[in-house]
Length: 218
Image (cartoon, rainbow, N blue to C red; front, side, top):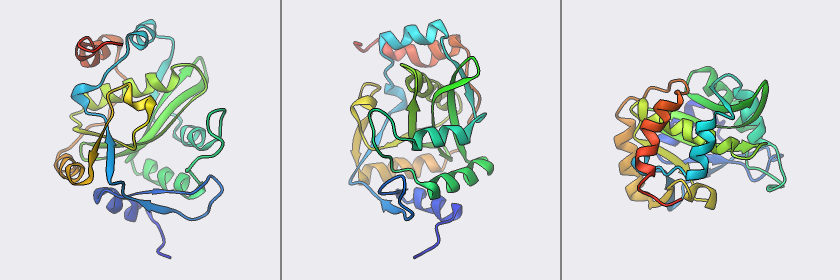
């Protein structure tokens, strides 16, 4: 079996392929290339009205890249709504190496000094491949996603890849597109640079996200 390295992983993502394990305890990886790919169009990202209130209140402190290891392990852990996950030790090892290389990132939500939610993914060109998210408090991962999209829009990103579609993601405007259309969008976005920055103040979140959300019902 071919040894999976960070370099091989980057090549796979550039060809529309990503790894998953069958379970948390599985040692091997499967390569996945869905016929339909989940994405969130950045210009149609929808913030529900109730979540806008949470963002405005500043309940969570948001940070980037300050606890990547804790975030990916939080995503790998089982929870009340998921008995198992597809993130095994090999994926944790590979993405930790990509984080050390400045290519993988985490967006984290905190209450005081407690990490209560977050997400992680891989940044290449102007694409962010969202891998997984977790939450230990209501709205914690949703707030992380809002900050991710604001960071992406501010940094010139063009494509947010969610891999699959879930009910959770659909409320934010996620859609499924066929593989051919996805590869066109991927190729275009990989050819342009993106700048992954830091969480933005509420005024910038409002400017970048809420103006388009007002055209939707919550």
